[in-house]
Image (cartoon, rainbow, N blue to C red; front, top):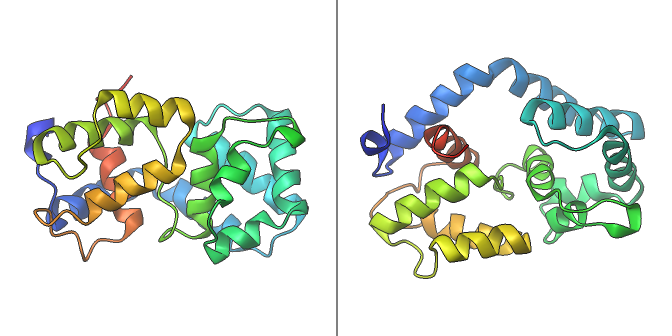
Amino acid sequence: MVFDDWKKPSEEVVKHFTNVFEIANHRSEMELKRLFDQEPTEENIGKRVNRLSAIYGTRISLPDQKLIASFIFKEGIFEDAVAGKDGVVEKIAVNENYGYNHCLSFASKFCSFCNPEVYPIYDSVVLEVLRRLNSDYHFDAAYDKAEMKRIRNNLSYARFCKLIDNFRNHVDFHLENCKLREIDKYLWTSGKGLVD
């Protein structure tokens, strides 16, 4: 399947790519779900951070993983993410008080595993797929290459979420029966290979 084969999003296309993702990633996704279903302790939050980083290749060093896990546990971030509170992704992503910053992709993944229907997963592959789709279907008036760079450079999760909402609610796509996590899986899987 090439880009043109799945170019117009629909419920059928989203479900197809969700299925492809789930077949390819079943074991790792089940491992992460089991970890995230456990009662939060400092030790198992550390395991969640470590395994999520390893499985998704977030390139966060082991010392930074320990700092992130400590912050998540001590500040009650896990509970805030489960509750779907605003600003949680940004709190994890940029936290100079704990000595790390700029891990927006990881932070969105962590929060998505806590509450997949509130937090879309931020990823450069997804940004590129959305840019290409927007050039044909115009679901977001301001999204182009320059806006994509601004989102990346400014680590703007709120803008990214708005972009996902605009995509999800575009009348031509009929995605009202698709869950946010299914849309994440569709965008990432369909775009794999478009971005190095």
